[in-house]
Structure formats: C-alpha cells, structure tokens
Amino acid sequence: MGPGAYAVRANEPDLTHAGQPRIVPMRVAKHFSVVDKDPDPRGMPVIGCDGEQGAVCKEIWVDRSEPQVRYLELEAKGGRRIMLPITLAKVRGKKGVIEVSSITGAQFADAPTLGNYDQITLAEEDKVVAYYGGGTLYATPERAEPLL
Image (cartoon, rainbow, N blue to C red; front, top):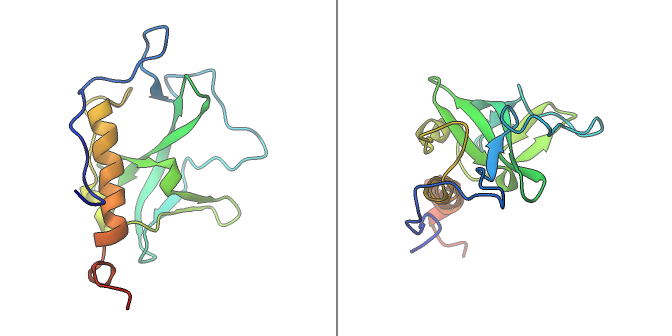
C-alpha cells in the first residue's frame, strides 16, 4: 500500500490487436516522429527535484494503439538504462532540459531496468511507475513529514 505500491502483473508486454508489443521505442516504431513544433527530448539532460542532473534522455517510447508518448528511455549516471513515465516529466524545450519533481538526481541510478529494451512488460510498467510515484512522497526526508 502507498505511493510506491504496485500489483504483480504478467511479465509480458501489453499487445496491440495485431499481436505486437503495444509500447515500444521509436527505433522500433519507425513510422512515429516528433512533430516539428514540439521539442525533441533526446539528448536533453534530466534534472531531479534537487536541481541535480541524474540522466540524459536517449529515446522516446510510444504507444502503437493510442498514438502518444508513454515513456522516455534515459541513461542514468553509471550507464544504466532506465525508463521515465512521460506523465511525470516536464520537457522544457526552450531551456533544453527535462525536469522531474518526484525524485532527486542521484535516485535515477536506482530506477528499475527492463529485461528487453525493445518492449516493456506489464510488470515492468508497474514497477517503473511505482518507483517515481513512491519518490513523490519519500524522495527526501521532509516529504514524509506532515505539512502542518
């Protein structure tokens, strides 16, 4: 229970009606592209809630069934490849950075990894979202304290 909790779902990807993995990187879904007027986050540094850089964006993951961005693939310090839900990221095109308010820069290094970087399983999705969700309340000691 709590912001870092998740259900143990199947360790297999969600599939499209055609039987293909639904959420994949753009290197797999080659027919997707970033619209010219939108900032392309690839190559941008990723900044945590403490203002420290924790990663660099390497790839955009899209949903083949509902054409939209779902995740950003990051390279954390130390070279680990991790995922970031797009709903928890603020892509600041004019600043050239991605801001994440749920975890610190150092905490990117401990984010869950994937078994296959051409698809994400239902279980992996839950773990990734739970990691950042848990950080919303527990990333720093003062977050766990009452506001009053």
